[in-house]
Each structure stands twice: as C-alpha cells, then as structure tokens.
Length: 267
Image 1 (tube, rainbow, N blue to C red):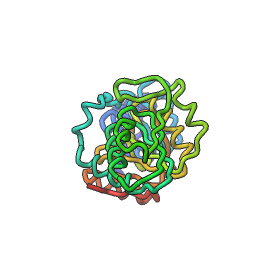
Image 2 (image 1 turned 180 degrees about the vertical axis):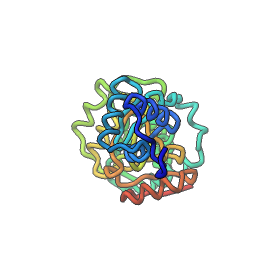
Image 3 (image 1 turned 120 degrees about the horizontal axis):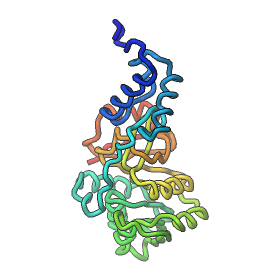
Image 4 (image 1 turned 135 degrees about the vertical axis):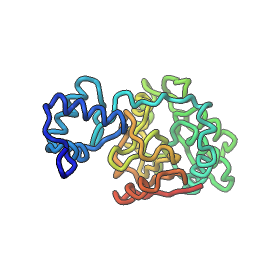
C-alpha cells in the first residue's frame, strides 16, 4: 500500500479476489470505493465486478456490487410480526394519514403493509377508498372497513411464506390500472443501491405496482435502511417518500435526503 492508502498494482486475478473478499465482508461496496482502494479506474473496477458476476460470485447493483450469498433468509410473515413492531405501527399510521376520500391505492405484502392496512381501516372518517392488493393478510386487515373501503385482491399464485399472490396472473389486473398512491414494503433502501427486495417473484409484482402509481411511497422500518438486496425495484429518485422508523441510521437518512428523497422518520 502506498502513502495515499491505495493498494499497489496487483495482477487482475488477485485484485478481483481481494475485491470479492471486501464485498463479502461489507455486503455492499461501491465502484468508487474500490477504484480508490485499488488504484485503478472505475472502468477497470466495473470490468472486475462484471467478471465476478459472470462467475456467480457477486450480484451487480447500481453503483457497486453485493455478494451472491448476501440473501438473508426470507422470514415467514408470522416470524416478522414482532420485529420492529412499534415502528411498523407508527409507519402504518403515518401512511394511512396521507389518504383522502375517493382515493385509489395499491398496498403490497408483509407485516408493515398489514400494519398500514390496519391503520387505514381504523380511519372511520375515510370513505370511498379502493385498495388493490396482492397480500391476503393485507386484505383481511381491511375487511372490517367494508363498505367504506373496497378491497380488490389481485389474482395469482399463492406464496404461503408471505401469504402473497404472484405471477402468473398477478400482474394482469395491474396492467389495466392507474392509481393515485402505492404503498410498498421492501427489504432494502439505500442511496446508491435504491429500493430492493429479497424475493424475486414478489419483486416483479412490486415493480408493476410502481409503474402504475402516480405517488410512490416506500414503507421500511429502520433495519431496512442502508441494506441492498438481490432484486432491485427502482432508484431512490423514483419514489416520492420513504417512511421509516427511529432505528434508521441517521447517516443513511441524511444521504437519502441529499439525493432529493423525502424521508419521514416516525415512531
């Protein structure tokens, strides 16, 4: 290593091996960081990362790479209920407060989505709202508010782990819609990596939801901020608001805001 803290030139194979070790250790490393550390151009770094990705050792994401084995095991819906429970309640209440009479809404799956549905149902003054969802738990939370709130469950193949409906068929109705607001959960929100998810089938439905909504709002407890998962949903620039909890890393919140993203910390 030289006086500037950069690695001395090494053979490409060894450089890639060291890059891989760093990516595994840190879970997400940016191209710019690797360029500075190894004293090579960003173009060279991208080539190295593409080579590692071709071998199945990393996943390329916007701005950098994550290790292929980053995938945290997806937790069943019931196992996730107690995690950051207070934050999810606060996030759901903040999201529900944004709705007005006569609005059309998309809500996806997961415990935060269910908390949001519960908070919407609790707004007894809210009328003539139509909610489209691919989450069975989400729909059941809204059922007590019928007929003030009309619930339309998207078709599809059942995923028992999250009680969700996915392709084939899940996106057929979505392709015919244009709604005002989409409330989406996720597994990662990062200034560079964007909004990401663990599960690929659900990610495809989430992408379609984002595409047909005029206002896109991401619901993520603090543990999700700063994480990058395998399935990329969109850039941070593509969402109007991120609602998160007080456990969120303040530096990540600030970095998101620096990129022009509106972040609301609740709970």
